[in-house]
Image 1 (tube, rainbow, N blue to C red):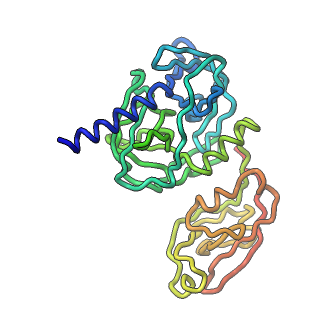
Image 2: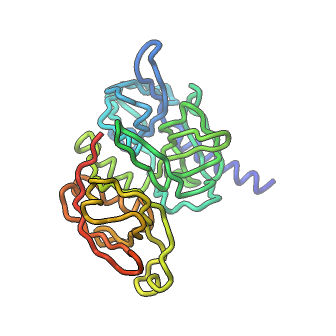
Length: 306
């Protein structure tokens, strides 16, 4: 009973701290109205939500648990990370505390706050079921995979999208983004990459990305190479798009990518995190293991377009 009481007190405390800071969003008017959730993350009225919640809209309305209502403008949206930044026109509650999803562990308590099925201020609790999940996203013809997505068994339903996933300290570590099945929810992690995307949306209204044209999967590094170069994992290329920057650089399916831009690579995120605007047209050194030999090439990313 004491353990249950402690659990309940923790969830209640997180709910009390976070619920007032999560808005119910209304996009469009009349029969075309859609909804979702948004999280206040700055004291001057900026909110974070999912790109798929706002779609192509440029404005909408937000309502908070205390009855506060305000119009908002869409500052920018990035479908390839499923994140969007909104700016409230009126007064909003103070900001949540953003945490770092990279510190989460499987089994850790998390609390989801949002507006599922139009029920404002709903709270569910569960645990981190898995880390490192991938979420395919698309913008026009351009596709990308959001890496390190958080999987939780905290109940999520339509309308939760854009809401907060908080840890036991009340820090928002994820933005709920999808319902993958019964008892299965996903959230975009709040981490260094998320912060960079948000900063870019605030500055430019969109996120420009570099494009290499390769598809890979994590793979172990042979023991001899692992000992010598202190790398245990790399990214095995399963596809190199013909005519792409990766193909022009001489990369081939079967290559085991060890580093890009002199930074170790263990998964797709290791490459994607370097393919922001400043990488476009810039020489990017790539080291791969090919037939037991180390091969260095120079790839020049082009701009990813829809």
